[in-house]
Length: 330
Image (tube, rainbow, N blue to C red; front, top):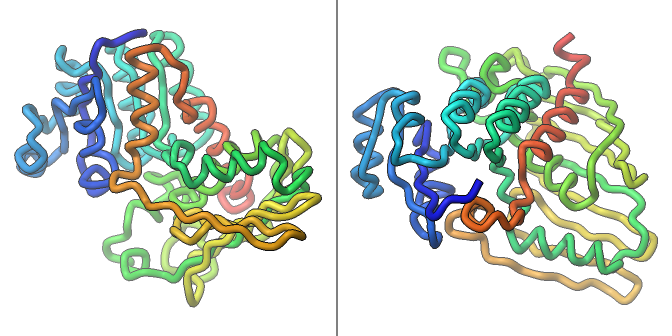
């Protein structure tokens, strides 16, 4: 599929689209945002007015079937990702879907099959794969800066927020029927995906999940998740979403050194070897999706094959998360 210009329609123009993604579609060559949709029409109209978008809808199918729209960005919670992807594929339109790709691996497989059958590309919004910060880490690894890669460790924990404590109005992020799981699915997916990007696919996983704080039914703790990459690299991760403070550290350890970095922070990327410590600082992009969307637009307009985040890679992360929490949901 090759488009002369990508004319985007957004389904679900909520908070994530205000700065992180929406404006990027207007700033990239051969790309424009032409329509948005929210179920509350007044909110869709307000977004369209503020962002200078010519069309707005309160019905997703109307946006999908608008002949002027030729690519769909699905920015809703995961519970509707599969539904809208299947409808967009049926309409013959490429899909860019928010992360996590779906509620579970089975839904991801259906989305991949529908897009392949329709002959349309499927991309997933794991935008860190295109950011210079993480490309630098990949360059260091590929250039042998830490020698042979041995293992990776992840420690991520966060405090409970009022949003997740409010039993009367729970965030969709801690409702498994919408999100697929708890905050692990929403946040840890970023780390697991970037590790897939840096170190290759994970092929074996074990994990143990539980709920310790009792604020909601979803898991709030994933302890000692262990995994083995196809390359032979080992991994271990600890995630907790009911801790006393926030922490975010990843370390990739090799035979000659280690690389330390955060997933969500903007601390320097640190390389430690026997020669000492080197650090690299990077500015966070104003619109964090923009570097990835640039690769998608290049794919759709030149068939460049440059986008590093596809349905196939996104589904792998869903599979890993599902394996890590399956004891809890059984």
